[in-house]
Image (cartoon, rainbow, N blue to C red):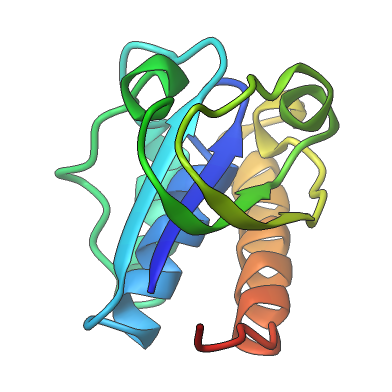
Amino acid sequence: MKILILCTGNSCRSQMAEGFLRSLHPEWKIFSAGTKPEKEVNPLAVKVMEEAEIDISHHQPKNIQQFIGYDFDYVITVCDNARESCPIFTGKVKHRLHIGFEDPADARGNEEERLEVYRRIRNEIMNQFENLKIKKL
């Protein structure tokens, strides 16, 4: 199984989803990328994933352009902006899914208040991807 998870910055939601799917299915090839990647993975995303015993601290945001010619079983967008600006793949994509999540980077307040938003989004991502019925092709 080969899966690409897309969002805009590839610093929060797609990184959390990639980390979670890799922990759930280590035998699968899981990638994430952004339409406008940030310079680094959001530190609060790293922190809340550590709380769930998933290490994404070594992840780096990647540009969708490096995956355009690849074949994927699934391309999954996790934000509306990525879904709207998702490029045309020259590789074969068997299934496209959209599972949208609020952007935790938009959270305001002190660090603990922002962490609560990141935890909620992390839990939503984990729940959605844990219950996702991926067809073995």
